[in-house]
Image (tube, rainbow, N blue to C red; front, side, top):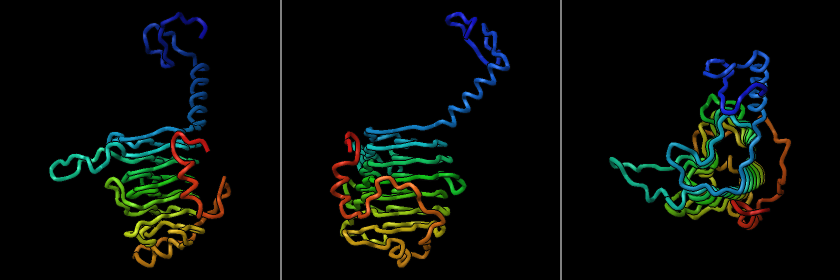
Amino acid sequence: MAGWARGERFSHRGDVPDSPGWSDEQKETVDRMRAELLKLSTAVVDHLYWETVPPAYDAVTLRGATHVWAFHNTFTDGPHFDASNPRCFGREYQVHDGALGITNTSDLVTAWYNRFNDHDRTMLIGSSDKDTKLRVTLHHNVFQSIVQRAPLARVGQVHLYNNHFDTAARNGYTHSYSVNARAGVQVVAQNNCWTLSSDRKASQLLSGDGTGAVAGSGNMVNGSVTDLVAAYNAANKKKIKPETNWRPTLSRGLESSAAGLPASLARSAGEGVLK
């Protein structure tokens, strides 16, 4: 800025010593540019390996973020798995939170070709039942030895397609459910693949509070196309609605069959892999 000597401080409030302050016009310009930067919040997170994060944090947290891509990442608790956590007052001292959190009115988020391994509370979409926006797409991801929240989704519109879920227990992580639909969320699940261990059933892949909707098609369980919502509703009192109030209009790379996903995603998902 004209008239500034090197090392002098400045403030648009004019209350910092050695500062001539900003004019009203300059302050208006700075405020306008700041607002534009906040609005233009596109971000890309790719080719990273996330492991063992302190318990107060997710590995990656999106709060109020828009236009975010997360791709070719690997999220894992390794090498510090929950089974090695200490116990305090008879309870496990948890050192992990979520892997990927999408909350606080985040919007237009896409996570693709990521690998989620050996984790409990994996992905939260929506911080509360009063959250808003939350339009999220998850495709061509691998969820292996995940206990729950793949994802847990509230309120928004979520498109799941061509993901592979492997429920086999590993490193002390035992599957509870994959997708939780609650607080009126509208989930469209297309051509996903579940590889079930012998102790799991198709009725145990979904969860919900009775207010969410999951419109499924082409989803496969151990090689057979399966109606996940019908299987869940037959075994549970709180029903998941089988129809949504929206349909996706953008489905980049949507594969018409889930049959080949275990083999193809084993080669192409995760950090350090170029498709």
